[in-house]
Image 1: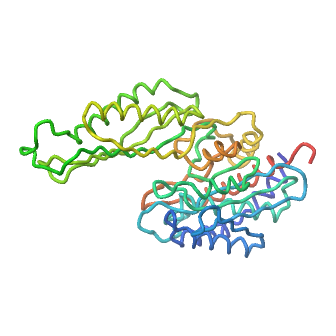
Image 2: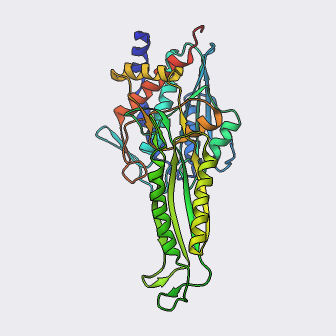
Amino acid sequence: MDKDVVAQIRQAVDEQRLVDTAMKLIAVPSPTRSAGAVADCLAQILDADGFTVERPVADWPEAPAVAVRFDSGRPGRVLQFDGHLDTVHLPFVPPRHEQGCLYGSGSSDMKGGIAAFVEALRVLRDTDALRGGGILLTAHDHHEGPWGDRRQLYALIREGYTGDAVMLPEYLADRLPVAGRGMGIFEVRIRRDGVPVHEVLQPAGNPDVLGAGAQLVVSCQQLAKRLAHNTHEYAGCDTAFVGRIQSGEIYNQSPVECVVHGTRRWVTPGTIDAVRAEFDNLLQALAASRGVDIDFDFEVQGDAFSIDLEDPLVEAFQGAHTECTGAPLPLGCKPFVDDGNSFAQLAGIPALTHGPAATGAHTLSEQVPVPELVRVAQVYALTAVCYCSTAGA
């Protein structure tokens, strides 16, 4: 990588401008399905910076998405910077900047990361370091489950808002995630006929929904042991997990419903239907053996994926990371499902998740070090410089 370009990019990142952008975004509450105001805020920031802003509705008129295209005017690839503006449904924590860290709702997940790639876009324009190709910046609502269902991202992909590759600034900084598991969230409702009844007054043979729920928990644990043999070098193994079971109103009452929530994760792309069918068969057998009725929802958050290690994006990113930190990242897995899974599945493009080493995601204690945001902005800009230019550009 050209050392002069590296120095130019790194020096051009304006820490105060980046912090100001992040603070403005964090200051606007944006629980999933209610990100319209923060999308407007981001659009205003980009417009004030002189970018032409598009506002595609993308199947969610309550909060039109934000898109900016920056073209170098020379041949090359398009690298997409994509992020979600919505946050989980927790009480709003206002932004503050103390001792080199940003705090507040969405600071780590992922308004800080969005501010970093906005800064990278500014730097690429201001330095004219992009020798070919261009940048597509997109930001949207409807990411965080279970409140959102990714409909806005799906619509953006259908409408052609995709690059040749995409980078997502989720809070993952210790590895280069070249593979990840698919994930489905299940909600199983086990019911019986009749009304709640005192334990000593229930009729003989009264179906035990709570016992059926407990059996389902055990069945999922047994399934997890069998699934542990389905492995991937980087992604890990298939899993089945129960995190919540709910039933009953009082300790000595036979309830009429038991609800079991959990996740099913898998390492093999393209097996969503098989995974769902396997779980359905498990539930049908349980219903028949316990004399209960079972309904379930299985909401797929994303399919499994892997990235070709020879893809130009991998080389470009590792080169950029080395220039900024002195070393490439070790290859590894993506422990969570994010929008990169959707890009890989629906758009068929390589998706790299890399963001600041932030903490507190999905809690009231989100925080992100400002130097990490500066580093991410530098890495994104340098990755674009390497990736977007073609050999002939």
